[in-house]
Amino acid sequence: MWREWRGWWGGTAYSSAMSELQGGPGALFAIGGAEDKLKKRMVLQEFVEAAGGAKARIVVVPTASALGPDVIDVYRALFAALGAASVVGVRPENREDADDPAFIAPLNDATGIFMTGGNQLKLAGVVTGTAFGRAVTAAHARGAAVGGTSAGASILAEHMIAFGRSGATPRQRMSQLSGGLGLVQGAIVDQHFAQRNRYGRLLSLVAQSPGLLGIGVDEDTAAVVRGTHLEVVGRGAVTIFDGGRITSNAHSAKRSEPILASGVVLHVLPATATFDLQNRVLLSFGPQPPAAEIAEMAAAEADLRKLTKEIAAEGVSPRYYEERKKRAGRRTAKKSAASIGAAESRPEATEPLTRPTQAAGADSDLPDRTQTDNGTT
Image (tube, rainbow, N blue to C red; front, top):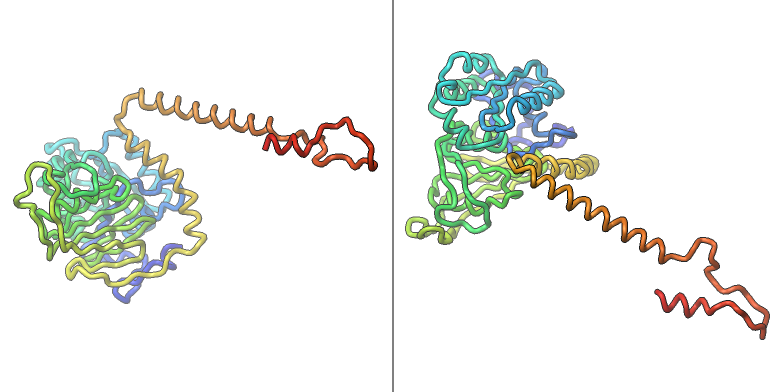
């Protein structure tokens, strides 16, 4: 199991006990999106354990999502299957809702708060600076685990990415920031990091604000923050840009010009790695998962890719799906034709593979099979 091989935290192993609820702030889960919901569910399992395991009382906040009540049903079923005692959904749609005591009440005794993905700017516009946002912060301070996936991950930081372009090269005006909840201090959190090629936009923000760490989280991966320490959970990696000693022309680059970013310290942290956010140094890294665990994660990859495509295609017109179905049909037909052609070119099973033995000097009315076969090979 995960806890049998996960790394050490500064020399002391973390147990699954809810030490956070016994005093001090809870754990923060910045999940890069597309977390496994079908098989291992490693990241979600870790969140449930941090929220109290069998005693967990989790509130799901789907404000960013456009999927309606279905998204609440999905996470309610997932967290219940992973052992949570109770799961409720609370969805403020505007700032008036976010100041309504009826929406805030479920947060008061929550041991875990989970914010879904979707529209980052909508989530920031509804939650930050409202009574609802303050209640989330208060829950974290008393020991509740607070997590989010995709947009829900970005809002954990003091400064969150509202939107931006993909690409490997940092450019001026590549992205825009908005206010977050401030639970992760001194950092900017980006998600779907490697899968959507968001290196450039995060690096551009670090070049413009070198005092902030850039934290990019891959899909089905979580940057788990406890105090000033960050631990990586999941099958991907967490990329950190430290621009403390950067040399940059961000102050003078025009429009969408490339930005100079020299001297940035890069950290790519796989599962079990732990990082000191305050001193900006690697603390430790543990062994990799057993071979059987890796094989199971690889087997789940196809399912994850399909799920990720469906989530990414949210809001795409029905024509997209029609074209996709037609392409799949053409590929199937092409493969079928190729297999039929290959079968026809093979000799029948009853055909002799070599010429029959004949008496010396005897004439044969059989064709020369050797030349025929060589001519068609």
